[in-house]
Image (cartoon, rainbow, N blue to C red; front, side, top):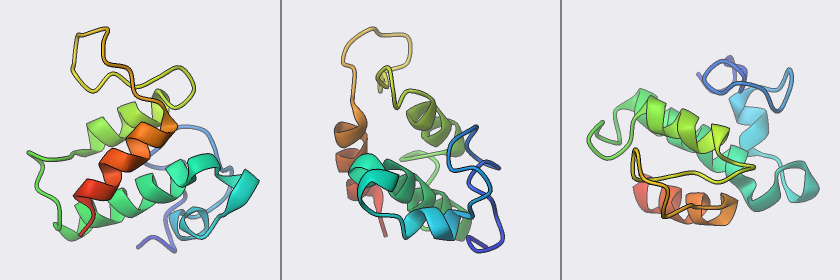
Length: 97
């Protein structure tokens, strides 16, 4: 599944022509804070049914990716708090199976 799906399928832009599996394996400057890797793993967990939609869903993951440069707002409609890449990764770690 992750081997055959480009990262750009569930997430717009970023990591051109790379599969989710390839992004999960990136390190260092290729994926700061490993945000792409964690979002890729979270997508896999969703596809496998290991994370309930009430905890995390595709729309939330996409919003996290879209907010990677300007901040992600975890509370819909609120201006605060604003999470940076590291805070998004910290949250995603709590959802991993």
